[in-house]
Image (cartoon, rainbow, N blue to C red):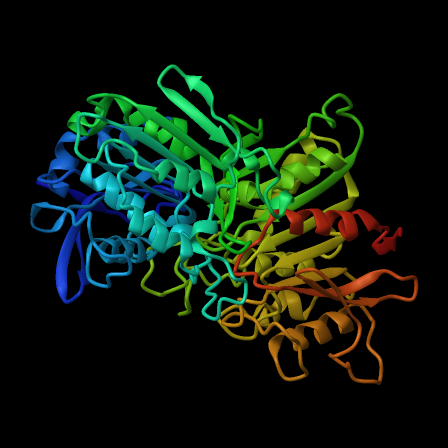
Length: 599
């Protein structure tokens, strides 16, 4: 009945999914094995979206797979970003809509277990910002209950004819402390965030013809969670939209347009799982929001396609025997004077991601809009990791990873790739070659430091996020001959780490740990060494979540900086991008090989 395909990485089409088709999967909940179906469309990108689909009572995952129309919609999605489908099913033919809050072995636990399986990367990769829920009739009730139970992991929910969550369940969820804050596990409740405080984009589609189809307060629950106090507006004849008008917390990292709840009343909408509504459910609602990891509970922002919405140039060309892709963003403010040289920033994604993911995650395009420079977002080629931690596994399907150690068999030469892309961009646009910068997150932070060390003559400064000079994790770039034999050029560096990243890098530097060692190594590279040892307890500047340590040259230039961010998971955010430009990149140039600092 089902089919699946397993391929190998093809240098001529490296981002093509290695697994494609339908897979029958199981999870264990309360000692019972429960099944679901996974559908991976042809053309699925790395770090794509994942939609959980819950049917009405009496329907199975097989029924959804065969009859619902979701597969056809996924197959024909016109954007580069396809969606992976998770078809779930009730146990014994019926969902337990009266399940008590907090049950550890019921339907909500089943959805949580499938979500946990969906975060694994054995056949595919769903990006953590793009998990969505939708359900029909009784399945819609369970979808709402699951979102209330674990709100910080979902970027949106749509229920069709299934909004009647019991008042007791809603009250229990609203009053319960939220421990899982999207990458930040707050077991002691030190932030005091309740589950009812977590905003959730939701579209409640009533169907008066079904037992659970008339909203009994669920839409109001989600409006309260989103901080919406205003009256709704008639968005379409069959759709009323409620949107937050007050600025959300962390304004640079969130958008109030994403704090959105819609309601509709459509008799008969849930028949045949709302087939006429499927495209609207996906493109008009779910696809529009993402919950990016960084702030507590995640940061909600609108989805913007880098080409269709932002006007980025898309390049896909063969370089060094591999098809490679990159995006180039030229702000509107730069285009009227194409002959005027402007700065250039390379912004590099982390493991599993791609250029378009980091464009939306970091929002460097907004910084470029404000200050007038070009941004390049390249994409790595799929590779296998050689480490085991909470984001990596040797068992993962090959996913985009920078080949900075040149250890991928027949892998690409990344240094040659970056040189080639730079020359191509400079040939098409006026670039100020004295002001070329590089930044990146996680695996991209190591690639950032490799470029900073080896191509110091090209870059004026570098800012690795969630990254230091690792000695473990199979990422010790200091052993590379080109690093050992590098020219003795200075290169300003600003490293970032999150308080929730102790599994990767120590938050507080010491003489013995990798964070302190990295600061000392960069201090030596930038000729700031002295006979006196570092006093790691001094020199910190604290502002809100930010803890900054800066080592300055005689002229005041911050040549080595390190920042750790309170309750920050393994993530990046637009506020970090703005800080990097405003306080760091904008102050430096490399002129005749020397780093020039302008306060």
